[in-house]
Picture 1 (cartoon, rainbow, N blue to C red):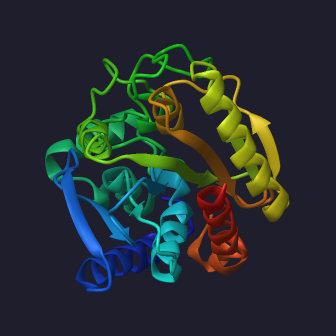
Picture 2: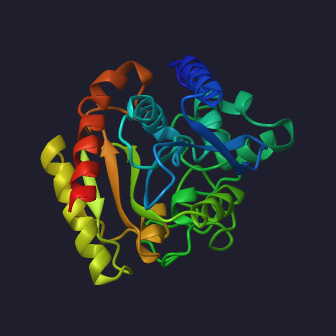
Length: 284
């Protein structure tokens, strides 16, 4: 790998996740297993009655700082409205990014090494354990993105078909069990709030724009229409009438991946924004 040791960040992330699973102050829903057999877990706080909120992170491996943000959101959340928190959508990919080949099951080491062009630096890895970019694998204009690639690798591979990946299949099945009001997907970096999947209805586009503008104003981020976004989780949810925005955490001056040491700066005002906007939505 590079001369930066990311393994400590992974240990902190793993420990935090295990502590959350043991915490009795909220519910843990195990909704599936990743390709390497890691648990896929969503947490819930607040009431199960009525429409729910959804916060997700960690779909792109090198953007694992978003996982820490969603975990801290869960701990801080003190609203009565029901909210699901899914901090680590891509556990296999994050393990590869932070641990290199040590984070890969023996059966897949040679494949992952080849997909990374035999480089020992996995710090820019975005994909899951099969070399599929999970955030272009949802059935929402799947395969029509300008940056999509047709072969497995560290980033941008769309998969053999929409929902070819077990992580996404499990997530969609889980989401379909509940009635969601809005979704916020955390990524990094750029201090941008994306909205406006072109395949969504005008009503959802309008609602998502309104939500994005509120986040951008409060966080002092830019609200930008996601013109070229296809196959992403937010795209899929918008297509299914769930208003969704994607928040890119951290200034562009940060290098990928953003380290845990930068967490306090990244997290500043994030929960305050969620609290204000959730209240606004429920009071509209």
